[in-house]
Length: 190
Image 1 (cartoon, rainbow, N blue to C red):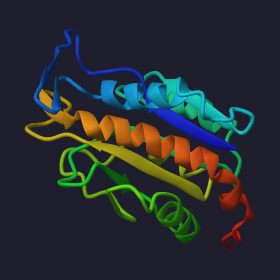
Image 2 (image 1 turned 180 degrees about the vertical axis):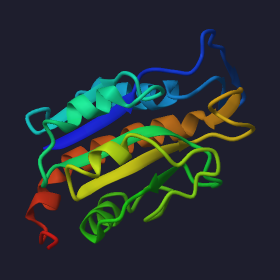
Image 3 (image 1 turned 90 degrees about the vertical axis):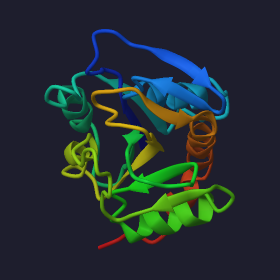
Image 4 (image 1 turned 45 degrees about the vertical axis):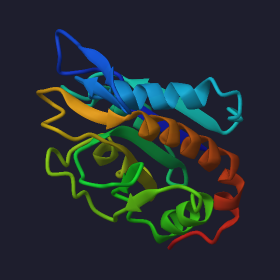
């Protein structure tokens, strides 16, 4: 089973958004993550027999939503956390906290047509705590799929996210889901 988890709460009481050229600009945490997940959801290209998409509450407080979802995650499930990242990149998106060699190999094969950086750790200079810190205690197979934001601290101020990044993360989710059977048939890690 694939669990796609995007926190749907925010630090903000008032939210702003505008389009400036090729960027969304505003208080984007985690609106762009939810938007990318919903674009994948409404594509009609995901087989939800083995995919579960969760928009979780309370990430900004105590990650209670992820804790509830994690109760149903098994050791062999693949968990994808979608959120904003401050990791500097010129690529369309960033994969962080991808510690499993099996997952890295699967992603490299599945996403070979995409422009992204991949890390075993979390180089985000703004924050390194997120929902993967809940799920990693339940499964060996997880990663953080980050939408790069620039121009400030995405927790407290307007930042910029390329419109293309949202579109590419949505497409990447679809490809991962379509190719999940390849992941299931790859050798398991011990």
